[in-house]
Image (cartoon, rainbow, N blue to C red):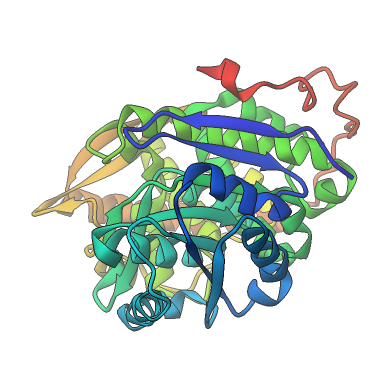
Length: 405
């Protein structure tokens, strides 16, 4: 069933459009041809999970649009977002004789987008690439904005480039093959956007969580929520493409979250770890009288209702040691994103000694909130009408992302 489609203009120096809808995999060739008109070859880069599911219609569409198309598949997982994989991708591009006018297609989640994007940014000093995100996390966050990277032994995303795609094509139908855990992982970034920029969205998620059940019941609303999140990120990226100021707000929860992710040996999802980081920094902000007292509990409760866990085993010392490798660190200080309330946040350059104290306080409070939520009887779900055409709080079919400028 087709649903309303959204097209959002990303007005960076290399402008492009984000397409959100259904049955878009079959249009990848057509859209790619429209943005790289003279290209002769296309290399589709995907992973071992996504390729068997979605590579065929993408390749068929590219070939129908006149591209000589090849496919490169690497093993799925964050542990393969490494220099060795990048080298393999670059060698394959050379083997296929891609030229500067040809294109790379990133088909998959955040790891694939990072790997393929970085390969495109470095092959022949930069060729065109198109993002085709297949996970919720990639659709609402990593596919938009031009960040590409690989992990190094010393930390996550330490080698990379800002390289904007020529187009982003988000087929919401792909979300149906995600596990509940994978779907929940993307919700961490959705909640992050609401926390830093959109109190109304936060309240809507409290009323009707974004869940796999909602995906089955109202695909139009899910597409609308994805478009709304992209619109939040668009406003930030257009203002600050290279993360010199405003864009750093998108790192809310990431300094501590990345520390948790690394300390836990990447066994936990990115969205889960960012959620833990958000609750930790919000809790510490309350103790500093920067943030309203109810925010950490509201945030923690919303994360749990979206299927994200607050459980972790790493100690504060272990998390701090990993967080020191964070890109936002500069010498003896680190830029933290501090919530001022739901829908508002600010940057706070923080000395590392103070950061360690904040981290310890925040993680202790996060453990306490998890215990509190575990002990509470399950809250009765609010009755909501999933037919969004009749809902007072939102109309997925009439929302126009372009009107949010």
